[in-house]
Length: 419
Ligand code: SAJ
Image 1 (cartoon, rainbow, N blue to C red):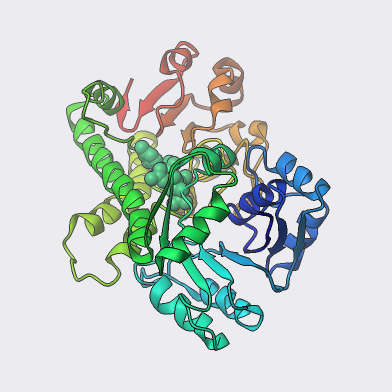
Image 2: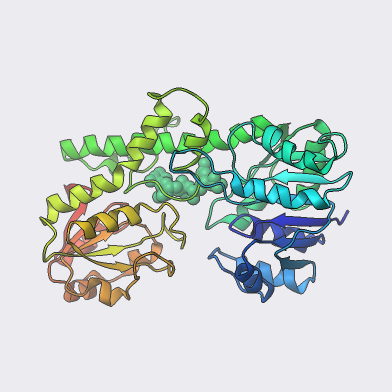
């Protein structure tokens, strides 16, 4: 049955979800506090890069089922998909969730469903969200329904994952979970798994914590492999041939808005200061400095040395630079007096100027590859080499074909190891 749904927060998760619901035939009010975002979306434009998003948005707007605005209005259901950043004290900043919840209070009506999709520390739905919504005078769980349904989509692949991923829904009551299932089942082809709200919150955090701890293992193994002068990527590839082994990839650090953040949410209220989750965070956070040390070892100190940084997004094939290790690496390289040219195939919006590829490599002493955008693989090392002063590549992602670059006269490093 078509319903009226207010989606609060039109970012990487809220906007694709709003489009999906509109295309399904629901009347969707997309709400964002930023007037410029609302304006762009209303004209069918997008403010973030995501495969297929523009087409989906235009389809949603053409269906006349989606409007974007800055104010919340009465609806049957509300979906909160706002950011939950990390504070400097490494705790969850839930002020956006609070603000979104408060904006629902004046329009909340009996029988409504409120779904929180934002990633939050365990207990947030039943404690904070319900407490704020109860300011309406209505009783959560009996007068209206509340559920947590964590988003689990992979940036760069959001539309296919919105549909195909299994979805965990935690209700504050069984009826709340059921109501949320009815809403999502219009487009979710994966299995919908019902549980309670706090379990659902923790499931989401566990998924990303697993990944962070596994990447920390890969990063620690990379340091060990460097000591033995063996190729860690080959080692992991061979180890992963074992049916029950799945070691992740080492890299320049862990970025994005989830993996470096969620482990902090899960340990926020626990006392374990020496636990594996915290230690993994520390290992992954130390990677950018490790890469800078490596650069210095390979190229010598900063003065008169130009480094061409390739890829500033937090991972390959996206434009997103949130928590990107490239930010720390570039800042530190500049602090150490290196000249830094920056090029990225996807990112336009960055705190340092992004050069053209030519400008970024002109007279450079080395290429430092930080994000494995697929386009890098197709560049011709001969053409690039001609513009450079010294032919060195430091590939932190195992992205480039070392033989091709070596044939073009490049000294090629996978982390410290010279190939
Ligand atoms: N990274 C490595 N080595 C790896 C894998 C990743 O260094 O083996 C780095 C990446 O380069 C990147 C960071 O980790 O800097 C995170 O990238 P990612 O692709 O692992 O994760 P996200 O943040 O793009 O998306 C994750 C996904 N979670 C899981 O795969 C468990 C996604 O499904 C979640 O929806 C998303 O977090 C989220 O919103 O929580």
